[in-house]
Length: 328
Length: 310
Image: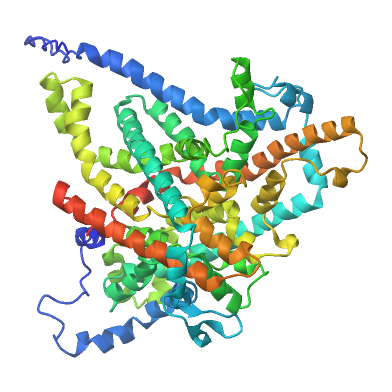
């Protein structure tokens, strides 16, 4: 964990444990130190209560994936059902199409959008004019702070087959009006609107990593007559490799949770065959069907979490084998 | 690539190293690419804003390209006269302020003690907060908890769940480690200050920047949120603006029953107005975060960097 590394850079306070260990006499016993720090524990109380209520209680509630949950009986009181619901999902006729959609949307997004922020950061990094760079950054960050509803709203309005500006342009050049939310185009619309939303903001991390590269390397390369392209290739790219690999691993971990809210907002009855993903299916089972099936929906969600965690571990293991870089 | 060698420096005058010839071309291409990308990010936003100020006829005929055509503010007047939209706006403001204050308070209260090296069980407590970030329960168990707490259909259902981000807590904790030196604490202790006193009198005033970042982060998140309202609320009087906007966008066509009168011309005019209204609503929902974020942009960058080390 890199937190420890971060902590290591910060000098410890003198009243930490002495180098000779904790047992240096009465003044340093654990109970005594806890008693002295009681006010700090009081400060920690509200966040702890919050965490227990809204982070740990739902985790405890995950068990309903293996129970026949009824609202009247509550989480603990419901009867056990074993792996009934996980099985129900795995054998359901919708399982394979949904898994396929989820994976396609994810891999498409990863392959299309992962390299772009890196390229943007490398380009921005070579810009000499501070004003120009700041201007580009300010504008390209903006979409990140716009809500999903607004982004999808803009998509609907601009790409509308009846009178949206994009279709007006298509017709002006002699094309046919196109429905960008249709079965055949949904994935492209989803991914490339995502590029518009996230590119600028995702480049921040790479820019930060680039600013940490020793300028003397560039100076030396310049003296040797290396061109800009060569310097980017031989100095900048290797410099941001660790960050890139870390982010790639993290992305693998979130493989199965494609932007749930955005997919849900972009869904319509005509594109369900490509837009139904694990998350939206789970939501539908719990909230849209006539009888809310909480246990079944939880089992679907749990299936997703377990797969996601294993993918994260797998990616981490691969990165350690191949690139000698890993998260943990 | 042809590389011109640096000319020998004469003893009288040092010369700059000549730039390789390819670099100029690269720079020109680079600046152009960045400009094109920036404009393509900006254009949809400008188009939406311009349309909301244009006449309905101009929008439908495709006359609006960049700047408003037939400038007017009808759409905004219609919104001001619609109680549903005004209520939505007010609700969003309430959620943003309450969520901002509560989230920031919890984040700071967790971040400061966990930054203190002399706190026993500090690492255990840190992991206590970190574990749920790796294993999240998902929508349904959280929904059941909210239901069992009796918060369904109240404002608390929007404000409380997810009001603190562990990610922000880690950033805040790191901020305190860096900005509140231990010597300061030592000195205050010598003067007989308690932990409470030190926190409220010294640490808090020192952490204005991180408090501002947290306030804006949580405020923007609440302003932009719609899904929790979507599943927890049935009472339309509590709907935030984003949810109202979603419902209006989902109605692709005007329902003639809402208008009355089968007159086709009238219906068309209404549809045009309806489109315009959507543009104006999008602008209203979009602008507050866009105004707010430049103020904390540089802190967001630092936060992203610290967070990336997590």
